[in-house]
Every structure is written in structure tokens, then in C-alpha cells.
Image 1 (tube, rainbow, N blue to C red):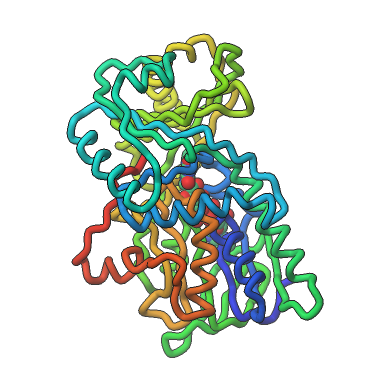
Image 2: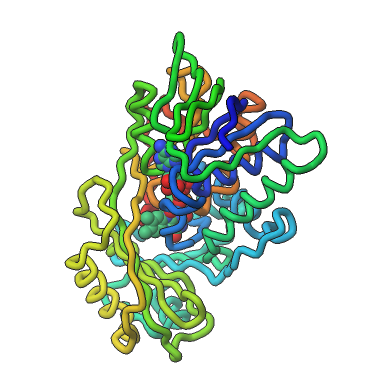
Length: 393
Ligand SMILES: Cc1cc2nc3c(=O)[nH]c(=O)nc-3n(C[C@H](O)[C@H](O)[C@H](O)COP(=O)(O)OP(=O)(O)OC[C@H]3O[C@@H](n4cnc5c(N)ncnc54)[C@H](O)[C@@H]3O)c2cc1C
């Protein structure tokens, strides 16, 4: 039931909202409402994503977010009480030009400096690791074995169920988990948040966390703020099982083509390829012309796929910012407004740590487990800092 008031209202129940709800419930002392427009949690980008997790980024802040988040995913069954299908099968970036190779050598040096044991691979080492791939034109790659996959639905529901349990402890503050409830307006007074207006009624609150993924720009409009996040369609296809698929097949990404493969449910392959010419918009259906281009490219790089059928396919929105980096923390222009959105296609893996950081930012005044200054909204106001992430798929 919709509460009359809550100390904190989280808008959006994907991985960010679910993780934030759990971490706020764990800290305790504040009442929280998590508001999701769909009939269930995790139906937005989180439920449509490929489930990849990796430490291999080009910016220090993203590597640090991955270090913390993947550690939390490794401990998830013990700490949250939910199996999340974690498979650290390794993540192999395959590169087809010297410019990318030079950048990825720098990335590996940064990752190594931060304690991540990723490494550069020669073409021969890649061939030995995954002999089934066509490596024409490839100049090298990078690999890290602690990267891999986890199941997004299990992560979301793990956080939701654990948060619910915490809220049932004697003396715990109320937690309201609301689905089928869309935020349609936000009331402000004197530049301060007063209430969230939903399709089910109004919740008085002084604090909101925008965790609305690709829809976050619309929440910005309600605040009179330009939050530069646009939806961009990305597609995924899953094949019928391939008995010849070796059990140690890793997450493989041909970086220059934005083309990736990973084992799915045993012996199927999940594959995606980003259409760099896709225009922004909430296009939730599959583009059959892109499916054809994608699958032809996939079969060229991974000829075994010619033996497979197409089991299923779908599309979902990336939540893209101008520098393809997330926007995190307090919003400077509206008192009581916080944001964790705009992960530009790599947010599932950062959900665990970002929920914790948002609890710190709201309750302690500042996120402290990881320094998020490079990802704050004010970078767009000053335009003096380029924190672009290179390893975007
Ligand atoms: C095809 C594809 C593949 C991807 N692969 C990967 C990957 O391998 N690894 C990775 O880390 N990331 C991947 N991503 C990106 C990842 O899915 C996102 O970065 C991440 O899920 C973002 O989580 P979120 O909670 O911010 O957004 P979402 O999961 O979209 O959650 C936002 C929620 O807000 C709700 N909402 C919106 N507006 C309102 C409103 N007005 N009122 C109430 N609720 C509202 C939505 O219904 C939604 O449930 C992929 C994305 C796609 C589309």
C-alpha cells in the first residue's frame, strides 16, 4: 500500500534501485519507498541485459567500482542469501587495430596498478584459448579470469528479498516495495523536494534517488533539470544448444565490431552486437535488419554458430550519457535529489557497489567507499573534465 510519507523515495526498481533499497535497509533508521512502474522489479534494462561482469575498464573510477562490485557478487550467496549464477569464466577482449591495442595496454597497466591481474594476450595465445574463433585481422587482446557472468534477475530479487527480511526485524524502519506504481511528477518548493506524485497517489518526502535507468531524463524534466541520458536500442540473440561448445568458453568480445558471445544455460550462445548508427528513442522491439547483419557477423567470427538455430531474441535500452559514464550522487540544483543512472550499457555489474555508495551519499553526506567525484552531474555544467570510458560496447 502506498505510504503517506517516506524519508527516501527511490524511483526505479532495476538493479540500482534494488541495491540502494537493500543498502538503506541494512543501514537502518530511515523509512524507504522503492517505486517501480512495471508489474515486477528488474524488468527494465537490468532484465534485458547480457549479465557480463568485468574489471576491464579504461578509467580508474570504473575499475574501482568493478573491484568492489565483483567482490560483493562473489560474496552474494553468503551475505544476501541468494545464488546468482556467478560464472567467472574470464572475459576476452579481441582487438583488430594497433590504436585499440595501445589503449588496451594502457588499460591493463592501470588495472594492474589497482590490483587487477588482467593481461595482454598475443594472437597465438588467443587462438590457443579459443580455437573455434576466426581471428582474421586480429592484432591481440586482453583477458582476466575473474571476469565473467552473473544472473541479473537473481541479483535484483536477492536484494529485494533481503531488504524485505531486514525490514521485518523488530524496531526496523518501514520499507515499502511498490510495483505497478509510476512516478508522474515531483513537487518542489523553494528548490527542495517535497513529494513524489505517482499513479497511485502522493508520497511526501524530502529525498529522492533517481534510479530510473534510460527513463531518468523524464524524471529530470519533472525537476526542471536537463539530465543528459538517452535510450539507445541494443539487441541480443540466443542460439539453440551447441553440443560442440567447449566447457571453458569465456565471454568473448570483438571490440572493434562491438560483437560479443558468451555461453548461456549450458551449451547455447548469447550474442549481441551494438549498432553504432542506432538513433536514440524508446524502440523496444527487435530490428530484423540488424538481426541479419549481427548474425552474419557472428557466424563469420564464430563459424560453429552456422550449426545453431535462433532460440530467442530481444531488444532493450542502453542508458547513454554524453561521455558514456554514469551520473552518480547529489544533484546540485535541487535540494534532496540524488541520482544513480546513465551507466551507458555497463551498469548491471556496478549495481551492488552503487547501491552502497548511494546509501553513504544520502546518509553520511558523501559516498566514501569509492570516490565518485569524476561521475558527478556537475561535470556537465563545468565541461572541464573528459572522463570518457573507452571500453564501451
Ligand atoms: C542489451 C543490453 C545488454 C547489456 N549488457 C550488459 C552487461 O553485459 N553487463 C552490464 O553490466 N550491463 C549491461 N547492460 C546495461 C545494464 O542493463 C544497465 O546499465 C543496468 O541494468 C541499469 O540498471 P538501472 O537499475 O539503472 O536501470 P533499469 O534496470 O532500466 O531500471 C530502471 C527502472 O526504473 C523504472 N522506471 C522508469 N521510470 C519510472 C517511473 N517514472 N516511475 C517508476 N519507475 C520507473 C523502469 O521500469 C525500470 O525498471 C546491458 C543493457 C542492454 C540493454
